[in-house]
Image 1: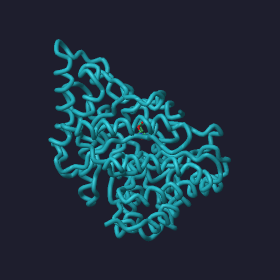
Image 2: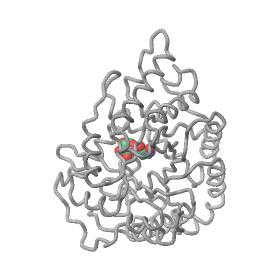
Image 3: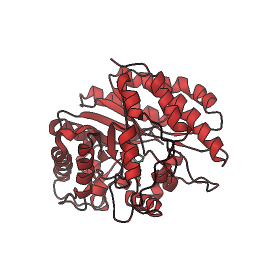
Image 4: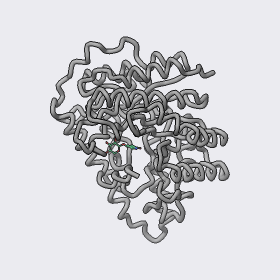
Length: 389
Ligand code: XIL
């Protein structure tokens, strides 16, 4: 699956890519588009018992890169969101320069801003269970004479320190991210899980530790299994993992469905209709085990579409609306977060550029912060959603 192209990127490279994208107009506040919709998405969603959110990024010298440092972007976040999640800054690669240090400076600034604006915060993530997303020092770590004990100590220390630092400000955590290898439906191994002895035991420890350190928080397993062709093995692996959590009494409350969805052609509605039955079976299997659902990282990759922006935007909106209609009809789903509100800062451009080099348009707002058809489609999906009790 295309997602494997992630191999080419490290998280830090990702930071640099987004920083460059932003530096074209470094720190210059863009004027928000004149035709900004008057009612924010979160205000539309609240009466339905839903929350809308987005990732955001830290401010770095010389680049606004999706952060609250750009007043026009900050205005969008404040208008449309009730909930934010740091895009990269809570990950091990960002927080852990070494085995015995933490660097909280950027994350602290983001959370202080969110608090000041009265916006709720999710934590992403406490363990991204793949070597390529862990710090180099951890992949090469010498766990000493008693590897299991040292690995457990490191993991528990990390999770406990992060959870205690942010206390009740972080109401929901992606405790474990992307542990399932989609090619073979089984769990990845990392230096931590090898030292501990099994991947299951490592993930279980992460959840038990988060439960103890953040008793108030919603604990989520987050992954990118999706509804498009090629995802069956991934979905099966995630179901197996979720079943195991229940069998072993591991405190996992919800499945985070990342929702980096991919258009399959111009007729988004027809595609969605053909994918829906299989996807419903998956969601039903998840919720039947007692899990809640979240859409944690919604964006729409404009694949298999002509370059014409108007055609792409419409297809993205149709496909996105059909997807959100299904997700918002799920009574166990209350939160929908975008992986960025503006194409200007989206990770998709760096992750997988279009073959024709036309700039990606995966978000509800364009490069200049003007609302696109996807923004209207999301508002319509919210309006059509049933009210939760
Ligand atoms: C991405 C960020 O958006 C990039 O800036 C970074 O280079 C790599 O990570 N699934 C996840 C997110 O769980 O953490 C990823 O975020 C996107 C896919």
